[in-house]
Length: 465
Image 1 (cartoon, rainbow, N blue to C red):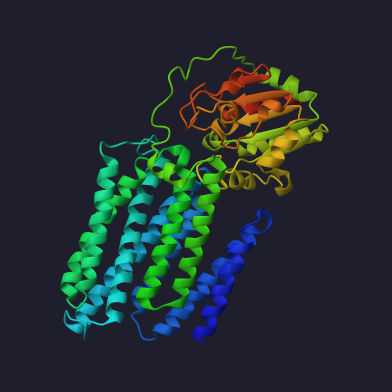
Image 2 (image 1 turned 60 degrees about the horizontal axis):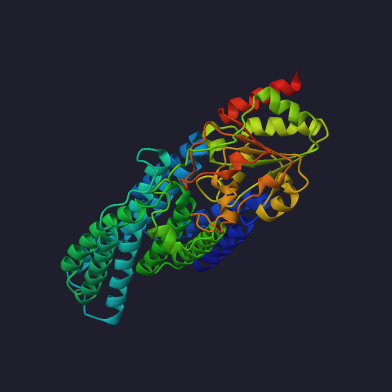
């Protein structure tokens, strides 16, 4: 029965992932994968048999309470922070399970394994991997959470000699892990080594994420998600639990694929993201603009009044202003006047993969109105008005024209090909890349220096009147 339930759960995980590859089936995919996890928990409890169900039920209740409150209370704009900290929970849980296995064996076997066997060495190796990957994921995710939340600055924090320190910590952790394999028969020594590895891994996780700036947070979140899966798979080998191995491997593999997709969308390598300190230095003269034309909501409404095709390009500024509902209202108003309205989504717009999709879905924007980068650039040529709502780097012409730019070669949405470009932004401040945006100086670009939500509401008011 347990084997059959595990097989069904694994199938549901795979179907769930498949469902989440498309916006229209994402909700079904999420429910399918969640059902698989519930089934996996039930099967595991049957497999365990006798246990202290007081502690187990307490854990289930506390976990369900945290999940429910997060689902109901956390704003869509704060979704990246929640994803980051949940990645950390997954990694931390794997590390704690691995440590508990050592302590359990100390109690059961009086500090000694029966014999130094290959199985004992493999057991110790998987424990060390679980602790190493799990604690790096936990501390790195906490730093990512604090950066996204604004508790610590989102700019890269570049410590002197950071690469040397990181290499030293990695080597120290590996050497400690190898030494632990030879001390597998002395569980008290293994415990000391495991706790030491936990400490070095915690520090390593912090130092790996601190130098990464806000522009690269989508990649970091994807990578940490992959780490949490790898930690879970390692813990599955510790516990000899097949469903944990399968689910961890699925998360690890899908996270790595998503990380590669994000890197490709920015035309940068993973090593450059992790070690490049991107965005640490703001270019000289970044605020020295000329030929910048600003206008009022009333003037914007006059332009939109005669537009037959409008494309919205949302960015992180829309998320900060929580302007997604105002975007939807303006889109509906324009459609009621006969205009064709689309929404161009850049893969790395916002703070996590799919951030803009989630926000627009919350505002009930139809799925078929959302178009990806390649289609958006094709549509932009005959577009009357492109409305950039809080986006910056993902619409910067420097990516296609300036080979010396930090974002050179990065695929961007070519809004400048539209007849008119409206940029709703509070100021001329640079984006996460810390560079000047030449779009603001184009002859067909008009700046509306306001909070995105307020600006859109004013435009709606003017159109209605």
